[in-house]
Length: 262
Image 1 (tube, rainbow, N blue to C red):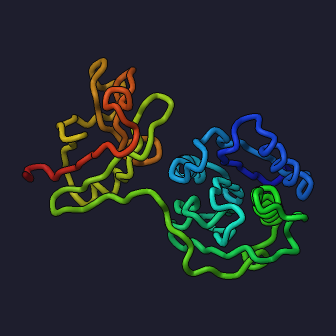
Image 2 (cartoon, one colour; image 1 turned 45 degrees about the horizontal axis):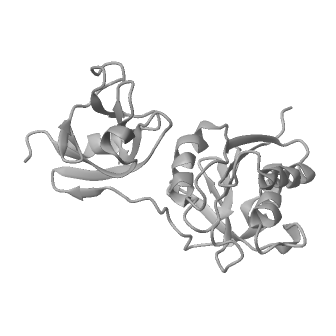
Image 3 (spheres, rainbow, N blue to C red; image 1 turned 90 degrees about the horizontal axis):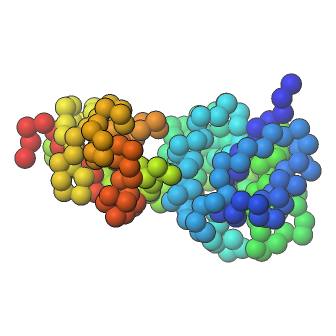
């Protein structure tokens, strides 16, 4: 029978000895673990991009997967280590918003990891990923529950990502980052926008932009808005880069207006 799945998302850098140390601790605690690297090449300290990666990948994995996310500029300070369960998954990381995607799910539950007997010693003030998060993630993947590793937490730090603004007949969102193709990923959930507005038109950076069902349905080089694979609207250029076209990957305003509104 295959061993438990544990995913890793960090800003440590591919090939980093820090990644190797995480894996060493995980496998020491749980030799049967199957480890999947989501990404280790996030910009240093970039909590928002880690959230975006988690939004796109976490719930594509089988139920029971444990997601270890270490983007932790506050390591060694009073920021809390936490574990979260949501939609049949478990998440472990710092309480700095990086697990905001999990916390936003219905019936999500969170604990403050405060059982030091589970930690790896000595605990470094500069590497909680290795000494706190990894051993606890391994124990959770092996079958411990949230109550076994911590105390209920009612005030975890929510997502750091901006939320759309509803203004009458329009919903105003923005791009949160870009994928490797230059497609701009937004904070506008396509299903929510459709339910709120009904038929609607879109503007990007103040200019009207047509929506498309697929990348290939737009004219060559055309800017378009379409529903991305994660259910959120994205801005794309057919066989080109929207990030290059618009000169930015974050903070590009995308506005959805109900048809017929001004």
